[in-house]
Length: 304
Image (cartoon, rainbow, N blue to C red; front, side, top):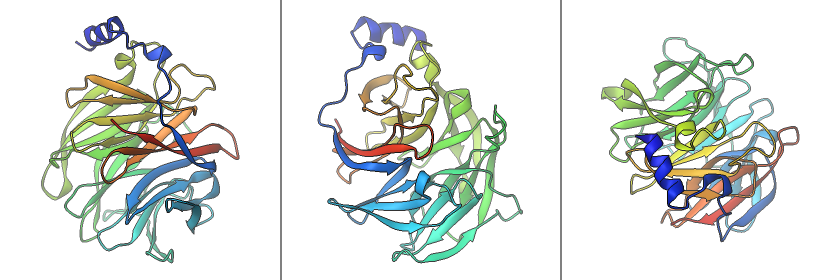
């Protein structure tokens, strides 16, 4: 079915290999160091800079470091219902915590059963006060098969809800709160889980393989995933080689995994993004350099 869809898209002129750059692109920060995991909160955009071990905030005019912690290796940031913030500390295996003034709070270091977090990566709120996060696993020894999904309940209890994932990465909850989407970067695909009571997960299945979606022209390494109010699913990617085909492309699919459109940015990697409150603007983190200092940019682009 997906192969038929790809053929039909090419016949209609949607040539993914030659997609034109999205118009209206604005650069909000020309000096970001591996920016990732943004979230819009209280009229500002918060995002991480992995290369600087920092969380930076863009207030509509300037970019300012809001919280930093050497050795953390921040990969994503999210606000909590207590008006605090969490950051996935990819390098030291913790969930960093800080308040609305940037004051550091005690980190989360393990779940209720003592399970540690190997490579905490991305967050997804469930709309009921809880937050899911991925732990990529031991990425130093690829292929990675020990990725996990954890759930932080509203009472701060942390439980492990899924395991044996191939480099668990981006994560998102459907708008009805019934389905969790999880990126398996090394398997080039996006999974679905059914969400049950107390954040439990079941019914693991493949939603879409990005290589199938693009006609197997190149391996796609999916990264972040977000879902808009229409239920459309945005999938970012992080190619691992310079000049990779389809670099800078964000794929937008519907709930049936049909490709609706693409957004193309002038960076090699487009790992993650966040919507403005009215969803008319998409804020995209871009990475251009694969080695330190990991040159990158923060973009805004018109959405729809």
